[in-house]
Image (cartoon, rainbow, N blue to C red; front, side):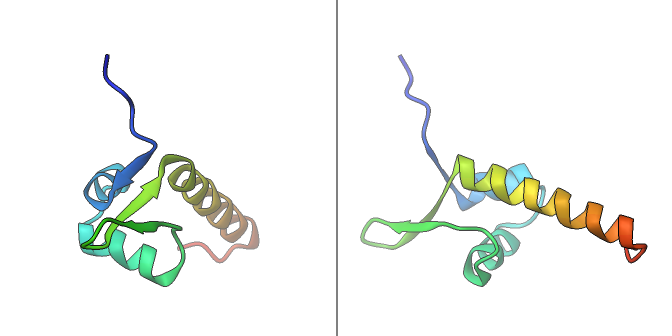
Length: 72
């Protein structure tokens, strides 16, 4: 029986968001996307719920821009 992971590596986050790994890392480093570092090499991991929260926040931001007439 496979155990579904609670956390995603940045490669998976990048795939979900359809961005590069560097862009995913920049989101984490800027604090826009919450993540933790694990292991001796400090590998970034993003909790699935945090990724979903980020996506929902981006939807809300875009909706606010559309409503204000400032969206591109």
